[in-house]
Image (tube, rainbow over all chains, first blue to last red):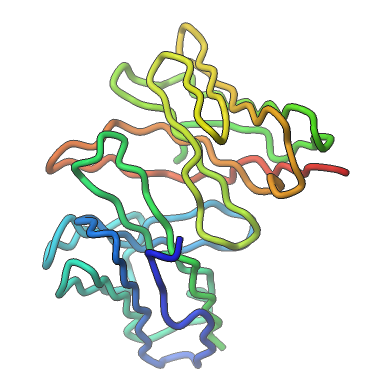
Amino acid sequence: DADVTQTPRNRITKTGKRIMLECSQTKGHDRMYWYRQDPGLGLRLIYYSFDVKDINKGEISDGYSVSRQAQAKFSLSLESAIPNQTALYFCATSDSKELQETQYFGPGTRLLVL
Amino acid sequence: DAKTTQPPSMDCAEGRAANLPCNHSTISGNEYVYWYRQIHSQGPQYIIHGLKNNETNEMASLIITEDRKSSTLILPHATLRDTAVYYCIVRVAPGVRSYDKVIFGPGTSLSVIP
């Protein structure tokens, strides 16, 4: 969905480096999410945010941190990247006022940690 | 753990109906059934959702059994572009300050064959 963008789309980094993945949305949604996907598996929730400065841990938050300084932006940081964080990362948004609260996903960021 | 079970893969001939089953035998009365799909490493896309009545939209139909323990997603005339992984998800309808995790299991990999 073009309304949810992620940067970078691809990233190669080395073990121990700090990196940040950015997510921006123009949908005006209040809720945002970060997921990771490993080959052959479904998506797992890392962190989610109901609104600006609201942060909640998901299933697999260890080794990650997030920041929600503005409603339209939600960034994911890997403080010290390790190889098992190699994965496809997706950002998503939803509108809490929408009854079914469909989640809209970005195109993904492919991260390789060497 | 996912609250649903789906076959890992299915084939469907182009132009025929694709019927994707999902078991959710432990579903609660306030939980909805959602379907998303993911086309080769793109972000997942919402398809349809329902509570207990059958639902239809421009993409698909959702048939939920009377006891709500299983459901079937129907793509009435499958095309090659419908080749994707389909996820069946059970979750409580979101509240103002509540959030029921969207758990993506492995899903069903549907291959539409020419």
